[in-house]
Figure: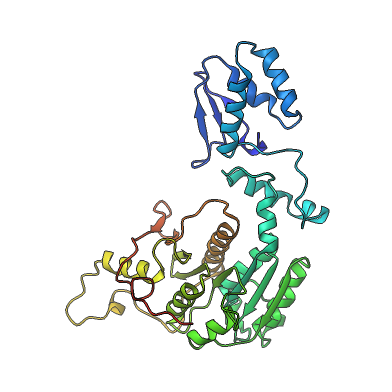
Length: 372
């Protein structure tokens, strides 16, 4: 049994397994008590034959094929892994030390049947991620992906570090003021994890062609497994990212903050609605009750810069990094095509927006024209 999923008995004799966290735990009726015994002997110290011997001694009336079927059910439900499984090829003892706690968390959230709990970490090691914009959201997301052991991370940002950045862009220090953000970010991230290949370039994205050049430089397919969009300008950049990622089949995650509302969007071409479907669905859902002739800015004014703090930027980057790692590893399972987040003014009301795919969507619907 996974140590994070250790079972316990309820007052009525049932077996609860998988922790008490919603989305993971399960409860099994156990009138004869043998399932409890099984979860106890499956503690990682016995072979399959040893487990069979213990069960036969404790519950001779329970057939071994019934025990085997129960073990298979527990494995399929994601509660079991092989305590003796070696590290997968591509990971070493340094990874075992560095990522032990991260792998334990992945194992806790993983409800699939895997040969080794380290397989998800291996997927991170082999992943290639493009981070576009290393300000508040992108900088925090880049830090987390590098700390988590993503194999290759490429940074793109045109700006230099300014004093006004330092209230929320935690990747930088006062000594970095006036320095290109990419240069400062490369130094900080390489110092965080030398096992990750971190590269970067100072570059402005002024249109979809620039994104095409970054994602698919003449090869017909992307050289990245995922795009993390932390940039918030030009205003059309999410639409460009959506079209280009659809064209090349690249999953992408974007995030940001609008005052106290912090959100991230999760997108994978071919699975669920695209960003433009989601945007159209959300626009249709909202009822701003504007008077004729009034602009939407009257209800949600746009400012030259977005009010933000280290808290909102940090939360945004965290949500983005979590979604990125979920898409890369499959842990936890995540169906793309939604937006999630937190409203700091209403902590008891989680933000989750999911709208259906639109057949007439100009980006992913029938007849859509995409960049190549």
